[in-house]
Image (cartoon, rainbow, N blue to C red; front, side, top):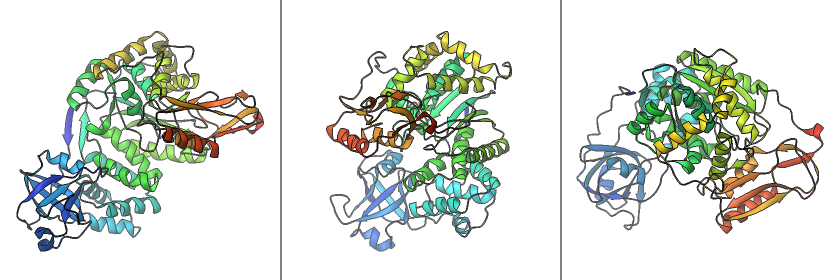
Length: 529
């Protein structure tokens, strides 16, 4: 594996070079935004004409950090002779408190004219998007400018060529991995379905077959668990890239957090704005997903688009449009893609939350009779599609090969290898460590389970403490089509703290997320599997 970096040039520092201040760590998590703090009575603040929320450059020991300026009036936060830096910004300099530092006005981003044209509804070209992504990756944009870009791209929907330009620019800015072989396979789901931990089954199956599958995943932002959160129950997920590369070469796969790899860093910055605004437009979704895969060195991708009444994608026409957009952009980027439309009417598996989802995954790998069959079947079908990227596997044979790898125990053995290589954590597969407190949610009437609200159950699991509390979450006792009697428990909620338990209980009392009725009322969705 080799790493390639973009050849973006760094603009020279501002000529306004002030006298040294003393560096101070301000222990505030500003979530992917570098923030600098100056006291209002600081001589530098008065002399240089700084304004709150403007971009400044802090330099110390030959290093620099671009940051957004906040002005404070309390010397307990920052003194008059100090410049404070938020947690992320301070860690970038890797210096001690009290180190001499200088602060000056930052040059305005060179791509601002292109941003203004996008805000006016104009179409941008390849160079425009590359310039904007470089400035975003170098943290030259303020949160206000980032928000303007995200909203402009969302309201004036990007055409498909613009989505390709954006994807290409995101992948070009930052680190790119090259594994020096083909195919390098990956699998991704657009999200929105609780418990959908198919990646933790697909990777060991495909790796046991011998295909290279370096899976880097995200942590949960608005969901009860991401793949990295669930894998962290079993093993370390924050690994240096060199260690990750060595274990991938040895075991043909990994399940790690992607935050240490610096892949498509502009996307990480944009996500910090998109999430609070609940903006997830098709063009930005496609660019975000594909840029990460391209930067990670993937050559072949299976993409899962779940469809259902409470999924991200609600209808088949919408799913087909999104599929075509993914296929177009992937083809322009020389990425082979297989887009699969799946059933997103309900959570996958039984557990929602890191420990519960890890339990489900291990049960499937161990061929336990208690394993959730929907998780098993979906993982096998996705793994089968990935195996068919192998030129030695005939089309249509992938599912049977995947099933054989799972049933023979080879997938479990490979997962154990990956867990040990990443650093195994204590996990009792027979009695997983669930949160201390729990309650059951029962149905007030009998009938058939006709609908399950993905979003409400995810919300309940988060209120119970997931993913921060690994053992918190929701354990489903019934799925679509099940017959239930009045008073029967639908699911069990786990929490570690009484306050979290009450928050979750209140949400369940408002709306438990289940609809009970006649079997003819059950929503139907026409999907590939």
